[in-house]
Amino acid sequence: MKRKLLATLCVSAMVLGLVGCGGAPASSGNDATGGDTSAAGDAAPAGDAASGLITVGVINNDPNESGYRTANVNDMKEMFCEANGYDAQFAYSLKNDEQIKAAQKMIQDGVQYLLLSAADTSGWDGVLKDAQDAGTRVILFDRTIDADESLYEASVVSDMAKEGETAVAWLADQKLDSYKIIHIQGAMGSAAQIGRSGALDAKVEAEDNWELVDQQTATWSAENAQQIVQAAIDAGKDFNVIYAENDDMAKGATAALDAANISHGVGGDVIIMGFDCNKYALQNLVDGKWNYDGQCNPFQASTIDGIIKKLEAGETLDSKVVIMEEQGFSADTITAEDVEKYGI
Image 1 (cartoon, one colour):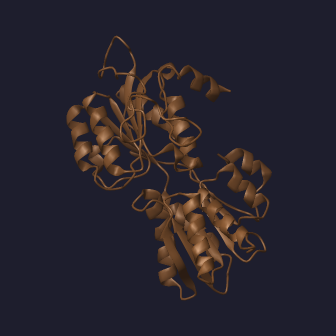
Image 2 (cartoon, one colour):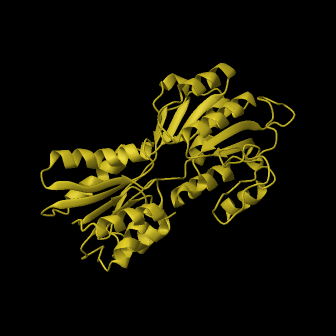
Image 3 (cartoon, one colour):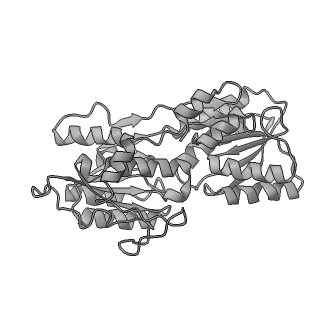
């Protein structure tokens, strides 16, 4: 109820331009990112005593990317609104160059804080230096980047490498005679893809009975994942594991298996693994249709709000890097209570 109330209060301060997700794009104020860079109108100059609001610019990935991203976007919108003392503008894209363009505009607008979930880990040094010169304080969220720590105040992120390591350790514990894996990757170069791919690549290289039958990016898309698996089936490839780097791609993969009458999940011919802990994914574990799902916690806004409040008060942060608490879920042990508690 509290989230719904805050979201209602924020409507006058923010308008989200959704593209292809049950809503039409906003008719004005949208740049090439597909996000709404005028979500709070003309942002008040930094330190504007007239408004008394903290100005923030939020750079995020496309809300349509996945169920995880939708939850993350909504969490940020609900927190960074006028009711909570913020004047916010937002921009969304899966492309680094579009995100950089939006970030540069926000810095020019004089936002006090730039909150960044980068599409790619590289290419941000120049923007972050511009922000530092302009007095804009940068906080990373959701994803890490390759930049000197002096260029940002804090980083609120998931440990993507640990997510991959936890998933691969679970898979190793299944003790298959041979591992013939279709690896469906997320957007290449993203922190999530690098972390979740890295652990699997290392295991395949180290073990003689681990093989990548196919390894392709589906850029988080269920449709693209379905096409990859369908092509593998049509080519007669032999596989017994699908390691998909998010739930939507796992869902697309299982659609291809179902169409070909190939069993999957507990007791099936193919082990299904996903990430993000969407409710439908966790329910698939409960129902025995999937085998594993790795958590990626999207609810980072309250932690960022706490960091901003400390910085505004002139306090020293306890840590520059805050790692979100996460875990992996197995069909063997998950409960209905887990679905309700951890599903997004």
